[in-house]
Image 1 (cartoon, rainbow, N blue to C red):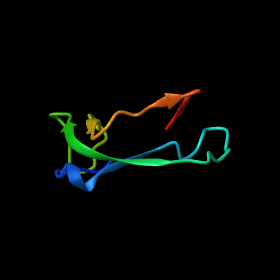
Image 2 (image 1 turned 60 degrees about the vertical axis):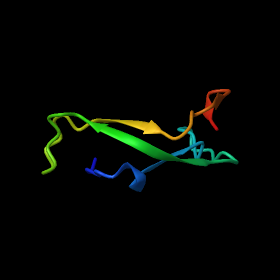
Image 3 (image 1 turned 60 degrees about the horizontal axis):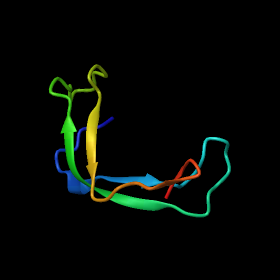
Image 4 (image 1 turned 135 degrees about the vertical axis):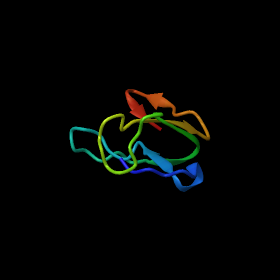
Length: 68
């Protein structure tokens, strides 16, 4: 993971592919409006506490197990 302090520089891509290797006919890019990094995240590359919660600008809809 890499540290980005400005959430407007981040986006999440959903519906692009599935784990079986088949390509899905759709994808959606959703912008990030907030990112909450673990308080003990180490920006120098240590992987401990390498987690963040991203708040998206819209909900992700799931249909038949796939994100739209």
